[in-house]
Image: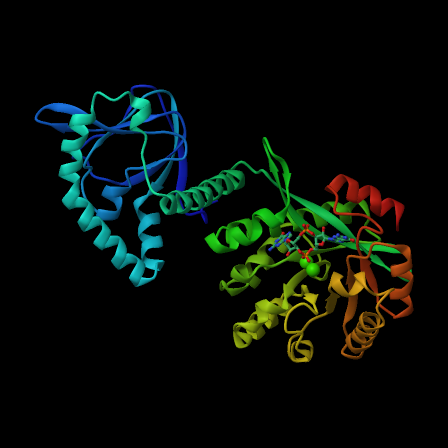
Length: 407
Ligand code: C2E
Ligand code: CA
Ligand code: CA
């Protein structure tokens, strides 16, 4: 897991533990997961409590933003779990931020330093208040920003833990040859097996993982796991040797070395390269077509198959179909949904299937939900169907059972 940047991690403290002391170098900020932390300063040899940080509160950020020594001390009041945000991580985020945002932050900090000494004096007068009333107070905008930021930090920390603790799992959805009515492959679809929340769908974490860069190590894990599964399925069904389709995200695609990473994994699991299919969306090709073309040709050189995913939802430029070396075209579910009731959708599917064949590609219809839809797709010479009509995505052992049933 050396690709994972050590950005957020969790640490436990016991009641009474000193988290940091005034005057010490500031190497990280903290978010309280559980427990309470007292923030205090020394004034004329007397300790003054500035506030109590409890679940969801951020503290220790001042020294980090200011690149300064700690201006207060922090001590766990009871057993506490904290998320640590380290300096390198924070610097990276600050460097990526809009210069105006950085400027505002610096201006705000300067002003804060001015009033800080007044705050300490004021706190001295209020010291006799019970601790419960000394919780941090902020305006409504601050609270909304805080809630969103802390949600994102917690999610990123939890996703990192999930990757290290191997909480992710791949499910497999059959891809069925319509004429033979036989399963010939599967699409690998990620799920998060959360220890308390149960199975979490990709809609809750895939695009977030793209935003944070976590999709790169996660994507590498997905490729390894899918290739391992292909080996298991091939050993069970050597006469079929089902293919596995793997979704590739934009960030994975843009990073140099994707083809060599995949080649190494295929070598390790002794897969036939043509049994590994990579699904790439149109939108991914649009931003840099030159780079996309080079990467796709490098992938073809190692022998894997390429599918253009969600065709019809983006720009749907026919340019992509002859310019790039795709083997299959996946027709988006939105067209299949209407294939029986909307003549225009039906005509698009029929035309796409013909066009794909004329360009030497196979077609896969996504989101097939009924035998009637499957029959119509066969009539339109579509090659494969994928959808709840055969099975929703299932765990690997169930995928093996499905193969035995539809072979
Ligand atoms: P996708 O690549 O278009 O995957 C197909 C989605 O359609 C899957 O949802 C699948 O469960 C769903 N589906 C298939 N047949 C039917 C059907 O008959 N009816 C209905 N209602 N739905 C059907 P899922 O697994 O929730 O995945 C959603 C999206 O998350 C995927 O869309 C893909 O964009 C992303 N994703 C999933 N797994 C991965 C992964 O391993 N890597 C990356 N980068 N993205 C992934
Ligand atoms: Ca897909
Ligand atoms: Ca799709």
